Amino acid sequence: MSDHATTFFHHAVTRTSTRARHTLVHRLGLMWEARRTRRILAELDARQLKDIGVSRSEAEAEAARAPWDIGPRR
Image 1: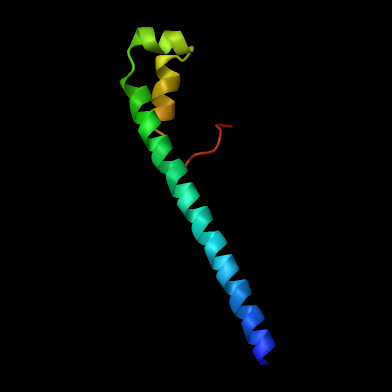
Image 2: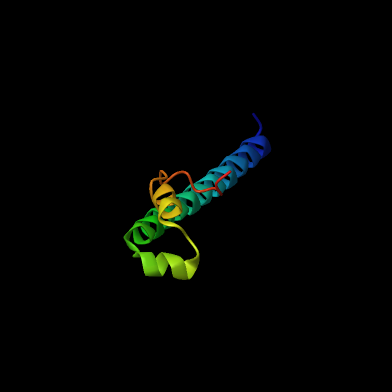
């Protein structure tokens, strides 16, 4: 491989690796936040759930979701 090709390959791999790391860190942050907010949701009382328009069964279902399940419910 020529010096130019080696340099190009190195920059392409480094850029991809950096992007992948940022994506992973972002996703881990979303998972941590989902875990935290679901725990809070599970602790709300009936009045607080009524205030936000969420039933107890909806709150329990959301709180039971796995941390990596961060997309909207289908």
